[in-house]
Structure formats: structure tokens, C-alpha cells
Length: 434
Image (cartoon, rainbow, N blue to C red; front, side):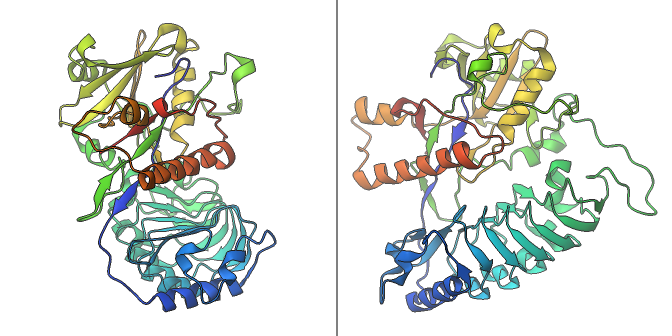
């Protein structure tokens, strides 16, 4: 553990799963049609011109061992044009990343055919029209981010049936009508829907016509009740689906410098921020819960220590293993609001390669952060202190860890809002999950 950091986890998940083969030619044809409808000033798709070509060698494409496309990564590629419905033919696609471009037109309803999709990131484009209700067919979807577009119309109530949905962002659009608050939507907070002037309901500041006045629930309250634990448990520790084998989940800690050190801070909090902060799906623990989980912060449970304090292994009442970071008093100066603000900023870094903060605890004398526990140590320990019972990290695995870490760093450094600078990447700070 490094000095002066609040450790935050970056996750790159490597999943091995047997997937049925589909026609590679059909996928090639679909991607060529997709490309033909786009303007590509940066030549990001230049490698797609190789005919006949193996599409698994194309840049921005990832395939499974059977040669079927599982991932399209074209975020921030300066692409413009409209999406081809033929993308719906990529039957094994798990991640579609097209954020930060100038894509326009309607979101194709054919995307609802991508039944294995786990992440759909179309945010920060120029899409208009309505949200296709066919997206409700994506029963394995975990991340749906359509924010910062010009989408209009109602939010399809059918989306509430996607029980796997952990992250939803529909903010900064032109949506209207009531915000569903049942099913999977019951776990989401107003931040998922903000800046849509014509939305109404409990998750907005505007009651729907004919509805009685309501008061938003307090963002900070006592320890979560048993009824809330279910939604908190939905925060992902990785990606494991059916018989998929999850292994080698690299994790990175990033440097977070406090606002009280002007020469080291990389973002600010607007002065107009409300003093009551929304912390989304974070669980607020009582100090007693964490004392019990760590055997009274016993030295035998210390995982590491640094300038920010000590990290303890803990086991919650439901059996979940966690890492509890107990911050030093001098690291928590600035009071309750400052700590809550920092927790909010950390929790805003949402990306498929980020394992999110699980919860926190704050009292007059204690400030603690709670993260999922990573079971297999660090890359450094696997390289230099490997137990004889553990296999060495082979080169393909090391490459996957490096690529996953790079994707997460790219998000933190370039695309996260506010941007977060790591500045301390090394093997000891890359942890491995099961």
C-alpha cells in the first residue's frame, strides 16, 4: 500500500466461457456495413480494410477463442454518422463502447438482439429519438450509459425488468414523463436522471401531475436496513456469468490527493454543490459493524499500511469479505462534508474496468472506506513471492492484465469527470482477484 492515497480499485475482467460459433462472415459483413455508414477522420478503422482478413486482428475488436466478436472498443474515436442496425448481428457481443464520438440519429432497435451484451456505452454523442424498448431484451446487461445525448420521449418501463442492471445513466438528455421506480430502477438515485427537464417522479425534483407532493429521501442516514442490503449486494466484484470462469482480475489503486494540498489536487468541487450529497448505491456502515468485521481492528487482520492509514481484512455479517481502510486523523481533516464530498467523487468514477467503492463509515473520530476484498495478492507477489502451489503468470495472462490496466487508466486520466491522475502505477499496486 502506498503513501498518501485512498486506494480505489481498477478491474479488468478476463472471462473464459464456451460460446457457440456463429458465422464469421456474417460478423465481417455486419462490421463492414457499420463502417460504411461512418466518417472516420482519424482512420481508426483503417485496419478493417484488410480483405479477406481475420476480423480478430482488426484494431478495436476483441474475439473469443472461437473467433467471434465479443467487444467493440471505439470510444473517443471522432467517429460521426449513424449506427447500422446490422450491429445487432454480433450475437456474442458483450461490450459495445462508442462513447465520446459524434454519432447521430436513432439508437437502432436491433441492439436488442445482442442478448449477451453486458455493457452498452453510447454516452456523449448526438443521438436523438427515443430509447428503444427492445433494450429490455438484454437480460445480462450490467452497465447502460446513454447520458449526454439528445434522447427524448418516455423511459421504457420494460427496462426495469433487467435485474442484472447495476449502473444506469440517462442524465443530460431531453427525456420526459414519469421515471419508473420499480424493479431494477428502485436502486438508482436522482443522479441517473438529472438534467432532463420534463422528467417527473420521486427520482426527480418535479412531482408528476396528479401525484401528491413528495420529499426526496435523506441521502445520509443510519446504517442501511436489511431491505437495502439486496441492492448494495448488486455492486459488481467482477464479471462471472453462468459457467464462465473468472480468473486474473487485475486491480489498480489510484492516487487521490486532498483539496487541502493545492499543489497536488487535480479536480475541484463546485461551490454551489449542495451540502447534502447523494452517494448512490454506497452502503453506509456503522462503526460497530466494521469493528466486528475486523475483530476490533486486530493487528492479525492488517493487509497493509501507508501514509493514509491501515487496511484491514474483514468479514461482514453476511459472510462477504471486505478490505477496510481506516484513515489516519490527519488524512481526514476538513470535516464531515469534506469527507462525504471526497467519497462522492470517488464513487462517480464509473466504468466497466472500475471496481467501485462498496461503502463507508464516518463518525466524529473515525473515517473508513470499505472495498471488496481481493483474494490473490498483487502482481508483484505473484512474480517475486509466488508460492510453489500457484502457477506462474504466463505471458498471455500478463498481456491481458496490462491491457485491462491500460483501459482503466485511460478512463481515469482522459474520460472520467472529473479526471483522476494515478501517478503511481507499479506491480505492487495491481491486485488479483480470483
